[in-house]
Image (cartoon, rainbow, N blue to C red; front, side):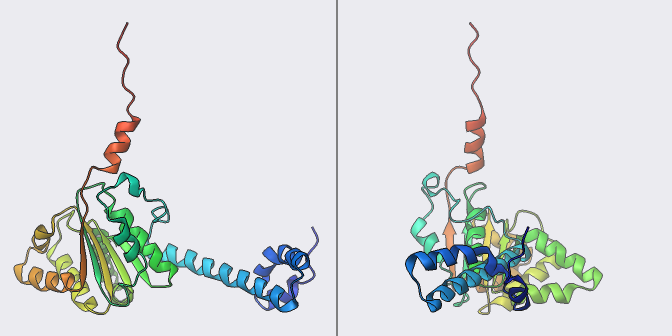
Length: 253
């Protein structure tokens, strides 16, 4: 297979990716009679898009987001209780520079985690720093990091992220230390970063997760200030899918 004569120079300039579209763009330039400047602009646009996608891929891998759960893959038609206009507005991520929070409450399987993940992906596309994890897992990782000497590094990443997503808040009981860590995350990020929380618990039950009235009051006061509380009702997507998979038995003759 012959090597493109421009490859060595493009590699030297760290532009070897341009070869992916060079021939196509050259043919387009000839067909459309584009000037040299217009032809170069097309190639540079391709390179910028390629690098943007590479950055997004790296950011997605580091963030913990599920790449399958996007706004495009969410079936709004099957979730009539979800305010599509509101979700699409939040997905513009204007809440992040305002350091606002989004709080989702509702039964299991109604799409809370999917929507939260989808908004996080939109934030990554806008080059915000994002961390997305189940709440209990993140607090468990902090506990392990404290034992290994990596606590400060992990907590710094949490506090310096533009957006963190804590999924399934209150699903499992928390130790006293985990409650302290959660309190620190909420208070340190107050008016400095955004948090998205999903929970199967009703909002009025969130204080019970802390097992400490004083910490709960202080943390929830900060969490709910400048927040978008969203209650999602309806039937579980997973239950509906299971029902579809069940084939009714035919009556015996």
